[in-house]
Image (tube, rainbow, N blue to C red):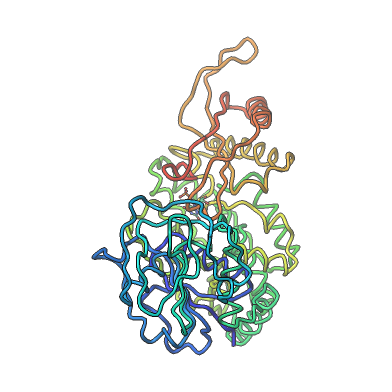
Length: 507
Ligand code: XMP
């Protein structure tokens, strides 16, 4: 049985990061909403309470009865998690005079406490909270302080209950990993045996059991997730897996042919379908971004469904869904900015059972599994690319000519990033074709042609992003090349907006 840590999610932006950090310690964990603790799961060995955007005094604050958990499992509260445990046990939490935000150094560290073993006074931690614990419940004691925060970390004496008001999961907390390790390994006794190799072994075994001789169909997108899911399924069931790769006409230059070659090299049984003409027809004259997304999503489902029906006796639909897509998130605002789940309707429409072998993995883990499976590095380390492809990078209506212009410009930019060793330094890059024309001069001729924007961002999860500070010389070279080589473009700009308030894609 795979032992696990449960992370109770109280809605903090860093909850997923706690999960990733615990996994980086080779310790398997799951994130569940604060009120959905799996009381019947015998594999749980410890519990972490996350932070929250709320104060314990907010009417809307998430509250939970810990009586079935405390005493049964070791508990670690982080930020709100720590304040909540102090508050419900009779401690005092008060709004701090000024919001505690940023770097702080631990002092008066009780290094005899197992949570702080190996932590020296002066260790840097990261604070981010509006409230602070001003007095602890009876039986609780301080085990570390900072300049401004007397109760930086506490423990309930004689019990396996700890709280820290800083965020050990964020990268700026230099001793954070040691503290998490002390908790999951030292205190909970976790064996830390979760690895890409152990995941592959156990997943292949359970896929064999789950699928038997059943046939599976899987849609490939050229992206990391669907590709790794396919290779994993192929390892488990071989030729009973058929993959379908649909070209909607808005992929990158030569991408369809290149990726098909990669897939065949990996021994996958792939059907490539060129459906670009159909998609161009459906998209003719459509300018509204969400309508473009819907048309492509629906078109993809129709083509996939048609091709899959040509196969006999298929029972399962394989998908490369990953953990961040599955975590039942406690979205406080609930606003949908863009509809990213383009093919959400596929399983319902096809009446197939769903098989999602990567649904418990974070993106970095999917990549590690891909590497362990021997997949080529260029497939593994590819930038994310949106399902509707270049359609959401052509502002306004879409024509094959505009796609050609954008493919050529994009190819120069991406190849340039690779040639200059910059590709792996950015999270994602691409070119946007703007719906503006401007005056230029080439030779003796006045031109009136299109403008494009280069977009390159750094990020860790696409939730927030900064524009990549690419060298001026590089930008100059790419700009020159695009204007000289791509017919129809006479102006290149660089997008210097961060997310938020902008988004990564322009549509
Ligand atoms: P935004 O533009 O919202 O993008 O900052 C965040 C990440 O999501 C990708 N993206 C999409 N992916 N279908 C997808 O499969 C879509 O419709 C879509 N729109 C944006 C985007 O490329 C970035 O990685």
